[in-house]
Amino acid sequence: MIVVAFVLLMPWAAPAADELPKEAVLPMTLAGQAVQASLDACKKDGYRVSVSVVDRAGVLRAMVRGDGAGPHTVDSSRKKAYTAASLRRPTTELAELMNKVPTLQALRDMNDQVLVLGGGLPIEIDGEVVGGIGVGGAPGAHLDDACAQAGLNAIGAVSKVPANK
Image (cartoon, rainbow, N blue to C red; front, side, top):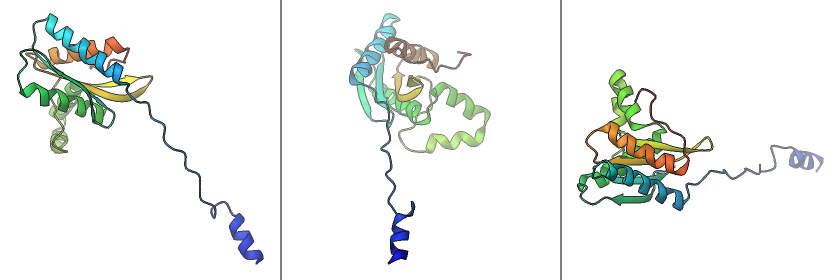
């Protein structure tokens, strides 16, 4: 009986109370503001684009296909946002890295949601990546990046665009 009582009092005998993980969530209002600011920036420059924002898990939070944007831009903007959120890096940076390190090309085939083309940026707020934004349809990756950056600026998110861009 004493042995049983001793075993029950040991710390490893009692189930540990695991804490639930606490993660910052990208509010829908911020997702919508980022999408609209990106669309407005591209529209001002005459680009017809689609813009998507996903949460940290890559789930779509907000999306808009601008007037005149091609149908392919819907998927490209979402996949760029997914890639930036999932890999926590700008898609332009990932493309450059893959060109320098050929063995990383396999990242492109990780799953069918990954798209490694410029225009996707992680959304970082208060030091935590809470999602990604993707823009598709401007005539160049650097222009998609600039429109995505306008969305980040509108919601006070940290810039992740590579410094040499």
